[in-house]
Length: 118
Image (cartoon, rainbow, N blue to C red; front, side):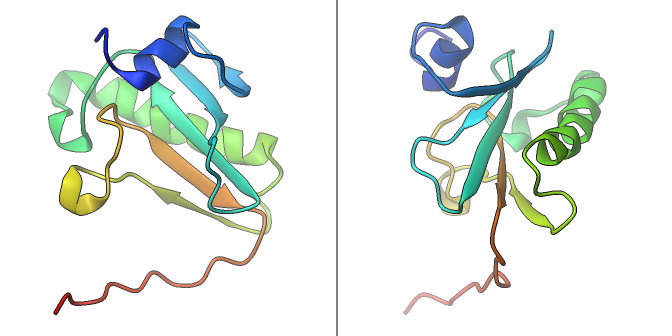
């Protein structure tokens, strides 16, 4: 998708601090980190949201999750622990509409608290 920020990163049109790359995935450091370690793992193929995955995407989805754990080990956060997140659509906090897994670590991350809006 030509106007997708993450597709442009994968294509090399926008620079990134790459952590990992294979034939199907690309991982890089988040430019606005929310923890000492904050990486994004994305499929190279454009898929807008988690909800857009279909049965033919099973192998890619499994690869995405397995490589996420590998990347957490590369980043040195696996042993102490880390949080993974996939935000989906606007109410889920998704800002870039290209599926991506956040890896957050390097410090103790407290429990997620969902607050009811007034």
